[in-house]
Amino acid sequence: MKLFLTTTGPDLHSELDPRFGRCAYLLLIDSETLEFQSFPNPSSSVSGGAGIKTAQFVADLKPDTVISGDFGPNAASALRSANIPMYLYGDCKTVEDVVRRLNSNSLKRF
Amino acid sequence: MMHQTPLKIAVASGKGGTGKTTVATSLALSLAKNLTETVMFLDCDVEAPNAHLFLKPEFSDQKQVEVLIPRVNETLCTHCGKCTEVCQFQAIAVLGQRTLVFPQLCHGCGSCTMICPTNAIQENPKSIGILQKGKAEQIEFARGVMDIGEPMAVPIIRQLKKWVKSTPSQITIVDSPPGTACPVVESMRGSDFILLVTEPTPFGLHDLRLAHQVAKELNIPTGLIINRDNGEFKELDNYCKAENLPVFLRIPFQRTIAEGIANGHTLVDILPETILSFQEICQTIRNIVK
Ligand code: SF4
Ligand code: SF4
Image 1 (tube, rainbow over the protein chains, first blue to last red):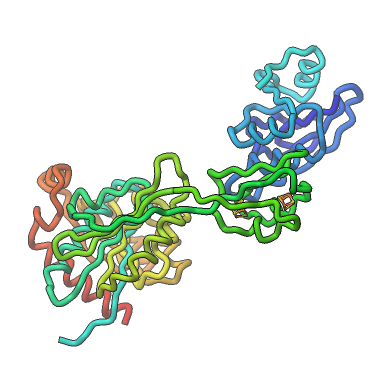
Image 2: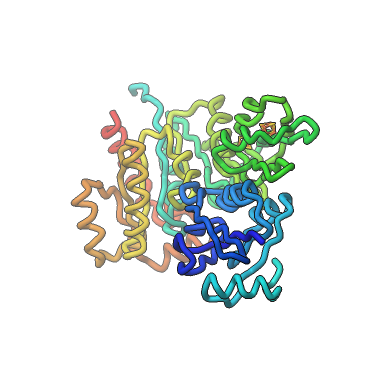
């Protein structure tokens, strides 16, 4: 399964970033193989509507799910329109935690 | 008396609660005592207008402010994403097979409609607030009031400024919104002078710096009025000296003033001697902008 996760850095050892629209990086991770691609958040320079721009970027790459600390109302309605399920990483501390919890189906649906 | 050129003074402060409206209304009242000049008061604090509480105008005219919000016809839309690229406000987004408009972010600029190659976008008017004008004794008074939950202050301020052009006045006093964001810039734009209001506290100085920065970027001359002055905060004086920011008036820290204002009185009611000070300030400003 292909998932998007918001992080503060560009690799699997980076800390999680709780802000969806304002995250530093987005990792596109294959939850079986842990292959990944990292992208700097394209919304870093916009003043308003960051969540929407990030959501559109995410939607264009067609992941199976997107995981963050929280989703703003605009980002949430954008991702819902694109039919991408949203999950919250909750008290996970690392990328590994998140992938394990996703694989065991124990993340909270947004 | 020589005929004066029109003068527009914006009264601003980096944050709310510094006495900006007190200064703006008292300035307008003082200048209106000179019956040879007409004074217009523009309340641009459209999110929380309160100058009417002090000037008590009677409104005689009203106008709706609308923006044109795009609506996408999905049967014509090819999801090419051109509208998204042209929108500066992220107010329209292509999400898979759907194109979504976020009216709360849309400024109604029309760019997306213009660029859409398939004419899939129609525009529908949406009300974001109202403009009102009338008279408060000799003062021409106008204000904008933003609809609750509408975050779009800038178009209201812009239309307010345009709407009152039909009522030319020699002196216009603009009560700017607090802060330093886009609505503040819009309210200051086109003014001849910016009168900043601050309090002699570290927070006051911090916000003053930001507001002063905006004025400098707009290249409009500035002066300062210090409210609730106790003469103890030296950093403020140092800042004014270093920045060549002239201090026009120090309103003393007095309980009678605070209580009077809380009861809806203006500074010129409470301290009539300030009328003269405000008239002199206006003369000083005329000399600066000449
Ligand atoms: S520009 Fe027109 S056709 Fe292209 S995505 Fe936007 S609405 Fe659809
Ligand atoms: S009208 Fe302007 S602000 Fe509104 S969606 Fe279109 S391009 Fe964006």
